[in-house]
Image (cartoon, rainbow, N blue to C red; front, side, top):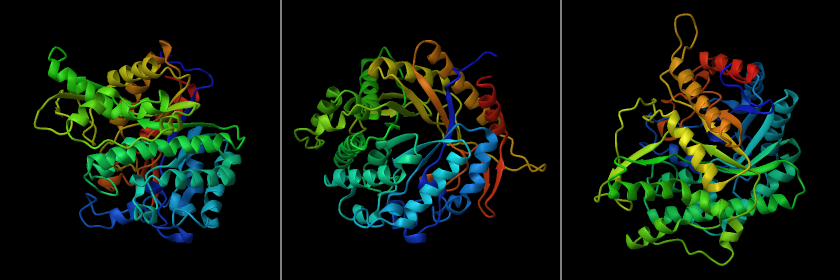
Length: 447
């Protein structure tokens, strides 16, 4: 066996509440920003919504049985904030608590560890109506919500993740407008990012006061950013700035207690209104946490372009193959990123909380779903991870994104990331070739 992993390595898979649960408005669930966003024509490529998605709300026992059959060690899932607090704050919805306790109990009964994400983008619409992540009060609202989860679910959770990809929640939601709430304001995106990070810190601080023993961390999405021409100083500079916006803007406050100076100085010169940072904000963000959760899929290569704002660059085509998301396939970029994180942040434990590929999957005449491209993607990325680990990078777990095909945000139901094929008309589940391949890796602890 060429790639053998430590005996305690944790192989897992992941999902998110809005992408799989469905049950829109059922059992007291309140409206979230994605409910509102998806029901506006034109926002989602195929006009679909998460109203039904994979119907996990009603089919979780079936899905957990599949997880068990594959030998999955850890299942990462998220909690829907408005399913717990329909108005974001105030009265707790007991049926929401019951649902998640039932799911977590079922996972435990089947010998599967749980990694629970407190926030995976489905903000209660009632809080968005009050400014959402641009309202500083949301730090307290989030801490209160997180504290409720610790109290009601804490005995069933092995890992807590405060936030999933605050870059996407802020930049895609408030600057690019591709995600809910669909705004186009760079300064608002930075303010949202600051409040997201403060909310993370407040949630960790509240957790430490509970006495619970499960580990807690955050999941950041990061990617290596390369200059098209490393010898061109303009390309090198914009690659530095883009890397700081994508990675350091979120990693540095969490792990170092600072924001990247070069980026903030550049943005100031470009006329961007930077967040008003109060005394104590950075200390709140810079809480001691137990692991570095990393979501990563692809690297980015950039070249200078003075017409672009606020960072004067655009992506360059490297000619490498891409997934159905048009994301570059580069296990070398994954290796480089792991080495950079280890040298830049020096954390004692890294968990790959998402990695995977969208492919054009279909059911063949034999009733099977063959997905060799996904299998080869996972194989090459896991091999790159093994290489980094052999050089001392402390990766302790790897979760494939994702368990089953699901509602892929702005792409609706048109992109399939899952190891399990979902027929959305019938909700039938069919394990793909990659699911069996991954199950063998788990069984053998390598390949």
